[in-house]
Amino acid sequence: MVSNAGLALAVALAPASMLACLAAARRRADGQAITAGLPLPVLAALALAAAIGVVALGWQRTQGAPGLLGSRLGHLALAAAALLLLAGLAAAWLHSRAPERAARAEWRRAGATLLGTMALLAALLAVAIAWQSDEALAIAHWPFAWRYDADLPVSGHTWRRLWLALGLTLVALALLTAALFARRGRLVLLTAAAGLLASASWPAPRLLLTEATHTSYQRSPLVFSDDNLLRGARLYQAHCAACHGVRADGRGVLAAALPAWPSVLGAALFDNRLEGELHARLAREGAAHGGAVAPGKALSPDQVWLVLDYLRVQAYGVSGGAGMPAIPAPVVALACRDGRAVTLSELRGLPVRVAAFRPDAPPEPLDPRLLTVALTRGGTPAAEADCVAASEAAWEAYALAAGVAPADLAGAQFMVDRRGWLRARRLPGAAPAWTSADNVCGPGGRMENTSAQGLGALLQAMDRSPIDIPDTRRRH
Ligand code: HEC
Image (cartoon, rainbow, N blue to C red; front, side, top):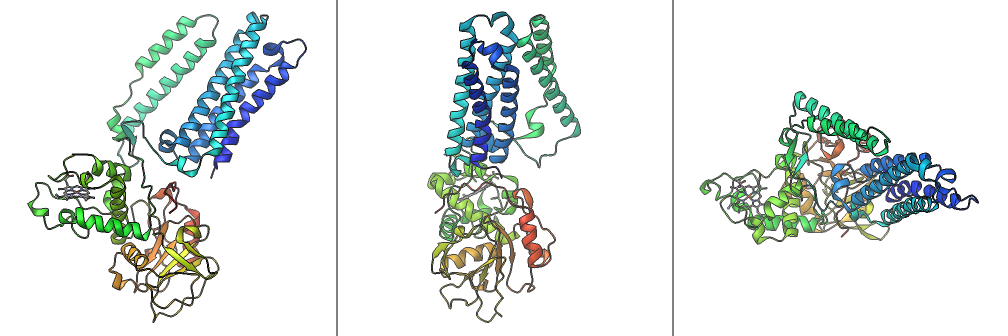
């Protein structure tokens, strides 16, 4: 994956060479900076190519349009790309005007100053990008009222209309750019561009987009830790269970008396709705909710995130995760063999097997390909484990992920990938090997059953399809 430094380097490359060019041109004795000393067409091509490259790399770094349009890092990358684009256009324009005006020294100086300033600003943006922390990837604000939803059924006819409108608009933009540089026939070009723009008929947004809020792509900033999940569980039981049911199955004691039946808050909810939209729905002050006040009235924004995180792990527990977006492995405090106490999130880099210790189970051999964490619930530390999580909270959080009561968790195992996502589980009483039925690995953050047989195949499957949801949660 692209790092901040890689992106910053890409941003810095073009302005640095532009500044070098300008500096070289200044030193020329004849002072023909703009015409003779500066290869303006080369500068223009360089800046335009760099602008495209920065958008492509920024897209990768911020993992798609939401990140590029909604996060601080994305905004910086877009600003840098826009600046480079402007610098490219300015260089091209100077080149197109050079023959008649280049004789004037002040015109040359103004051109060089303009390009130099733009290059300098772009270089500053590169420095700013290199300095950003991972939190700059957090999506603060989605700027549109609509968003793309891959699950929306879009007809071929709508796609064709979209491509046609897009093509016409691109041609119109090309004509507008040509008009900027044209010496003759500018009016014709402008008229043609306006005609094309007017004839582009875009399909209605609702045919290919779903409604979005500015929080659509926001994610919980809170650690997915055992303590937080249990806190979320308590909040849920206190504020929601009466209507939505103790197990979030929509069968609360008050359900039948309500004007509308409360929703099932399971995997399907997270499959169809983005976390940020659910958060907005719950936190919106005063919005009607099942005939009662909005739950957000009683809960703070962070408490709503706690409840949603709890509901996600609960949905994973019930469904095994298939079809819903991936969840992180609950982060628990560990005591490790080498004496260092760490948390699960600090073990990233190696796959981790989390096993709920059962005294009578035959010891499973340690495997050099992964670390083993034993959940012991304060009991006898397991001999065969790299780390031990002894707290009751850790045990209860993994019981949620297993979808069983804490008393029935002993013997369950979970597989956590190198980035800390929960990728597979083996419930107590299941076959003694990892088989395809336990494996819920899938690319793009959406979990799907894949057919991997055995531990080796599972580890390979996890590495082959890493989950690319950016992790912008606080570290502790
Ligand atoms: C007074 C009963 C009641 C309480 C309390 C309640 N809900 Fe609901 N909830 C409903 C009903 C009824 C619906 C379905 C109708 C609707 O969407 O308004 C619903 C819908 C939802 C939805 C689906 C919204 C959608 O747009 O699909 C979510 C998510 C939800 N509730 C979460 C919660 C959470 C979390 C809490 C606790 C913080 C909570 N509810 C508390 C009755 C309740």
